[in-house]
Length: 80
Image 1 (cartoon, rainbow, N blue to C red):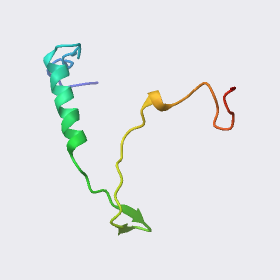
Image 2: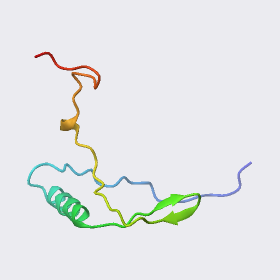
Image 3: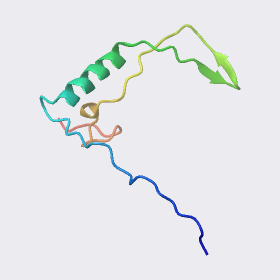
C-alpha cells in the first residue's frame, strides 16, 4: 500500500531545430565547426599507461565519404 503522494512537473522535450539553409542554428553550427577546425589540440599517446610524446604531429580529420570508392576493391584494377 502506498501512503505518499508525488507531485512533479511533466517532462518536456527540447525544441527540434531544422538546421535548414539560412537559419540561425545552421549559421551557429557552421561557426562552431570552423572554430573546431582552426583549433590545434595536443593529444599524446598512452603506451603501457605512460604518456608518450614524440614531437611528430599529424592532422587528424574525419574521412570524407567522397574519397571512398565502393565500385572496386583495393585488389581489383579498373578495366582500361
